[in-house]
Amino acid sequence: MPVWTCEQCGAQYPEAAAPPSSCPICEDERQYVNWNGQAWLTREELAQRHRLVWRDDLGLTGIALEPSFAIGQRALLVPDRGGCVMWDCVPLATREAITHVRSLGGLKAIAISHPHYYGAVADWSAAFDNAPVYLHGDDAQWVTRPYPSIVPWRGDSYRLSDDILLVRTGGHFAGGTVLYWRGGAEGRGALLTGDIAMVAMDRRSVSFMYSYPNYIPLNAAAVRVIARAIEPLAFDRIYGAWWGKNIATGAKPAFDRSVQRYIAAISG
Image (cartoon, rainbow, N blue to C red; front, side, top):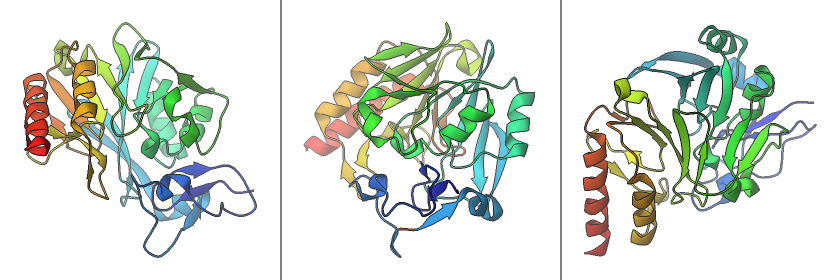
């Protein structure tokens, strides 16, 4: 039986003779149902219409679908002892992409910022000996394809290695998470934020939203919680969720300025 993927958000659902009647992620107010109605692709149909590409994005290998599909995020591979950590995920895993990741040392783990980027985590995990998939437990209700290797971690932080720390910030989702890479940016530290903190088009600032497509801003209290979670971390670079949406240097003061600007803007 086929595995089904939501055409609007890229979430993957379990094997079944027919697709689900609806996608709870798209019916939530942070996302939206396709204007033409709920639509599904089998894994094979998705692979026929799209391919995975990989390239360097400011020193990290990124992987994304081409042409762009659903939300359009790219995954990032953070090198670490014993293999790479895949940060966020994409809705497809292909033999060619898996082979390329193996050439870079394989996957030791997958970590996801929030449910919009769960994608094909089960397929990627299975391809690498059931590599653990770290999702914050506060978002467990949004898992659309349960899989034995999912680790629903709890608390405010979870250390994957000496160099890699997951930090729960909340915000966009209750379990919203960023990845802190101490060795990133040539040792100056890097923060991988997905769109928990969205890198703006000027690539000198970030912003925050509860719903991006429906233009619902995040409240000031939630942004302050994010800022407090980030404050102890030393970093010079931020990687966002899409190709090139990064702050290459000076990211810590840029983040702090962005928090103050955002709170002033919504409090005026």
